[in-house]
Image (cartoon, rainbow, N blue to C red):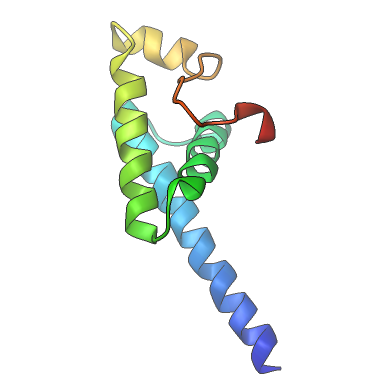
Length: 98
């Protein structure tokens, strides 16, 4: 029974991290997160997860990657329209494994 409780608590922590990444994306883009933005956030989160240990490291890596990605668009309207289809190229990231 204790093991089941530990698993639930671990999953709850994971969900909190995922939610935080979605909020980071939304703040940087300047919109409320919807389905498309959630998918993008999860892509960044899963890749950031591979980048090193620790929650803070993953979150910081995610924030830096998203900021660089968003800044690659010349204006806000283009960001919102093209965001789902454009990929950020970072060495070591495997988009096809997502």
